[in-house]
Length: 299
Image 1 (cartoon, rainbow, N blue to C red):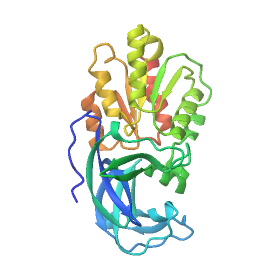
Image 2: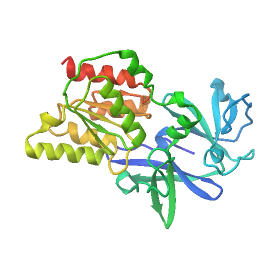
Image 3: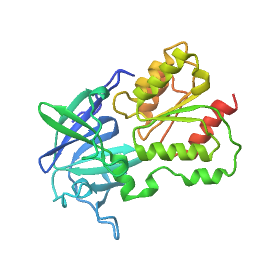
Image 4: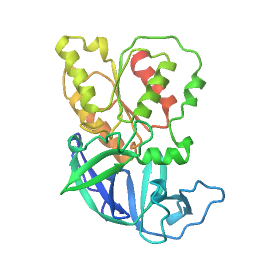
């Protein structure tokens, strides 16, 4: 299946691959997918997490295979079905699914944020829900699924401790991140690094509302001198936010750092075309501080 459908930059759209586990529909952002291949025999790894089926090496690349059904507490998958081979946070991982139904183009504005009945704030594995033809497609948080299996793949908060004591400053930074857990970790890490004047929002729309409100009041410089944004967010994604900020004479000089698990070569080109000042992958929280330092302290 062709997963390389081209999207115009900054339109607030994404392509979602719909797949099935036990007759339930789930979704993954096509931008995370390298390829979809038939199930292949894997080599079990001793003492591995129960959700890790094993490893295999298509085309000389070692890939970890994860039993997605087991991750969602639906039992264990039998041999067969498909592997969705992904790349995010600089990791190559295959997720075992029953079947793939197709790709849907949707707007982030149409993605429903899960309620607490589906996803508690820090423990749920759903980032959004799409209603399509009287059917619900649950978009899974694959980064959290992987981090739950191996916490070392998450934000390397220990990198902040290595920085040591730093002077406090009041430079205002606006953060757009829909994951409650990651939002908190980013805020806590930046505070450890000396940045105390932080506004954190849950998506690009909330962040853009803050910017527009400050513009109207003439207080933009007091509240927003740097923006840190994820890419995947409901209502408005980070690319759309970047496009809106960089196409406005009043805000185009505000530095934007895209901090996302999706920063690969293709996404980096998109971010550069939209005017992002820096882009880096989410595990690199220590490097995020260095980038922000260079944009706001050393200018």
